[in-house]
Image (cartoon, rainbow, N blue to C red; front, side, top):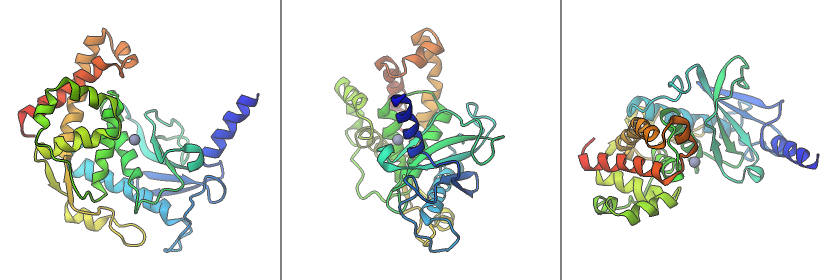
Length: 299
Ligand SMILES: [Zn+2]
């Protein structure tokens, strides 16, 4: 009983309550408590529309990242993908940071009865109530996880967290990118491979940025998009117009998807692979896909 109460206490504390407010911006719905432990800490409302600006800004950052990846760089849209067909929206729950511990979470499972309309299905993200999108790219990071989930079942935090951290380049200004010159040599080294498999967020600096720079994949965010997406106070969502690696990462995701057949064969069946997605054998097959893309030399 005590355990049950603790579990219930956890759920009530972390998620918005049944009386939560819902803010909609396009296909993004942000669900938040106006008062209490899970309510957004920053209640600034400079446009006086009754919605805390951070709530609007979270939705804006997600919509901006979505348009950039989907319409500019042709990433598959998680909504309507093979895995998520009949899913029409993204729901973002604002939760208490003290309970969540981390800044955000993206679920791979669909919310069958969405909170804004129980007849519709939604993809789900959780964002901590301390997040301020001006300084923090958690919403874009979590949205990128939805792209990953929509494309491939491949796992491994070196891939999922490392690449999601890379994706934050879309909305933040990166002062110095790691040098990718020695990446071709590193990719041939077993020690490097082992090092990559052990890390999560740090794989962005160890592997993903060097890969992007090495492959010279420097792209510009169109000025129309730079102008379109502004936070409530007028600050631009895209802090600079340069993004490295957007084309390379799309190809890596496609390569992982294409390798699912190989992975199924390696493990004997799809179910066996799914059970063992965090096995090094699985990682190596994914890694070979990255090597192949790098060896081709252009995207
Ligand atoms: Zn993440």
